[in-house]
Image (cartoon, rainbow, N blue to C red; front, side, top):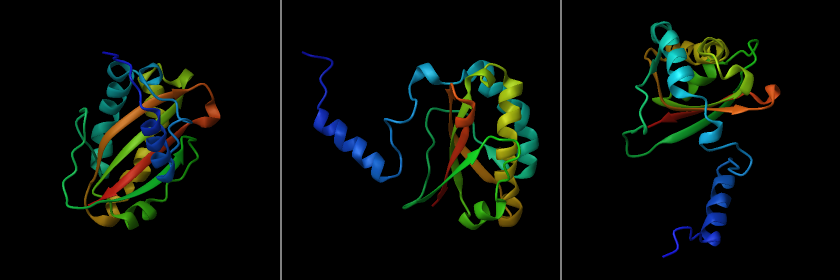
Amino acid sequence: MNILSIDFDILFERVSEYKRLGLNPLALATGCAVKVDLVRIVYPALRDLREELEREGLEIAPREDADIIKGSSAEIFRRIYSLDPSENIDSRDVADIDPDTATVVIQIYQRYADKPEMFAKLIEPVYRGVARASSYIKRKIRLGKGHSIVTPFQEDQFALFDFIKT
């Protein structure tokens, strides 16, 4: 039995499907080698930000391997934000979406991915902008699943949010 059996037709079909959805999996850095360390960086940064962000309206779900979203249908609205500290998140845009939950992919410059304080400093403005939307919709926005990856290029930092409305 060949364990490494790949049906390339199926692989290319799936890549094409992702591209139709607006995501090119061949252009993203993916896999374990590019993840920001969860235990030493991401979780401490989120722990430091959690209380204040939750007061502002962003509920950060427990870090688990899957995010289960209940509902018979869902709409997904994608927004990509710069991690530049001068970035202004349009909280009214997020409020207009009126999401029940959100998922996020953070791509951060590798030199900032080794200290929880620096990681927190870079994501905080974006997370606060999303949290501010809760004041317009009068309820918290839940941040479910998240991924954090590194890039060797500082200008390529971003936060990609998929806002999900069920």
